[in-house]
Amino acid sequence: MTPFFRQNIELMAGYVPGEQPKPGTPIIKLNTNENPYPPSPAAMAVLQNLDSEWLRRYPDPYANEFRQAVSEALGVPADWVIVGNGSDDVLNVVVRACAEGDRPIAYPMPTYVLYRTLAEIQPAKTIEIPYGEDFQLPMAELAAENAAITFIASPNSPSGHVVPTEELRQLAAQLTGILVVDEAYVDFANETALPLVQEFENVMVIRTLSKGYSLAGLRLGFGIAQPQLLEGLFKVKDSYNIDAIACLVGAAAMRDQAYKNACAEKVKASRAKLMHELNQLGFRVWDSQTNFLLVQPPHPSENLAEKLYLALKAAGILVRYFKQPGLNDKLRITVGTDEQNHQLIETLKQTHLL
Ligand SMILES: *Cc1c(COP(=O)(O)O)cnc(C)c1O
Image (tube, rainbow, N blue to C red):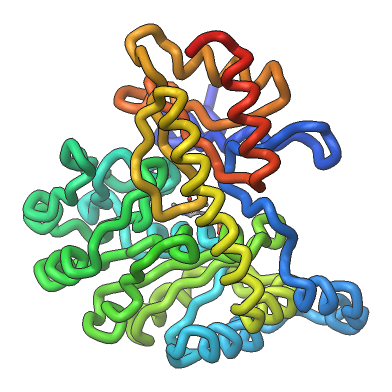
């Protein structure tokens, strides 16, 4: 029988997103790093007042209204911006445009699993280089590989650490391939690699509205790079990858930096409190510049991470457990509201597993 799929598709596992219970289910959802606060009221007003004419017509293929808003908010030229249906779409376009068999994709591990999935679909070879013990960047190894694409999530998931801009600068200078810095969590961080886009024609910074802007359901992300790097990507992306609603609502959210920053400050304050409380329960907690914490329960040898994941789930609290080497003794917990975090701590105490 002729197989339906190419061999690489037959063989690959497929990306497994975090569980998404139906909205309205009484659950505390701390597993996929959504923002616990609602989107900007200005963005919601645009949605509520949307003229039907926007839906009758095809959308702007370049989402120029949104690019203009990015330009104003971040001080980059509008034509240095490529917009995607979530930043996952931008990552996908970069892989499709730049990688194949002998044009590999490199990234330090552990990191965002989608990089591997996209490489498997292409297919392109992956070069996975472990981070150091305290998440030091394996710069020399990455530079020596000089892959067609080097992906660095910074701040990284699931570790929560930031790769210092100076290290990314040194790496970019040694690469002739593209360095993609995935800044999905930058709104909760103290540092950004955005200046490198000015300095290097091979650097692209990717951002999303899913985390900092509370718009994961809208699907809107963007990449910032010099126009000659974007040129090839525009050939590859779907013409109408941004729907008209996402373009307008996203532009309003981007223009409301004050609201986004205020929510991020609340999350950062809650993050510090939660970190302290988990420490008190005996967890090892890694420093985080994101809206989640990577934690290791006391007695990691007893499979406690998985037990706690299941006990929390039974009590209606979802956190993320990765059943893979190096992570299967840890949990990734999204920072919720203070009330949600309090419930998490109380529930952990009640498991009597600690
Ligand atoms: C959440 C996340 C993304 C995906 O963002 P979308 O814009 O929702 O597609 C990209 N990279 C990392 C590291 C993430 O954690």
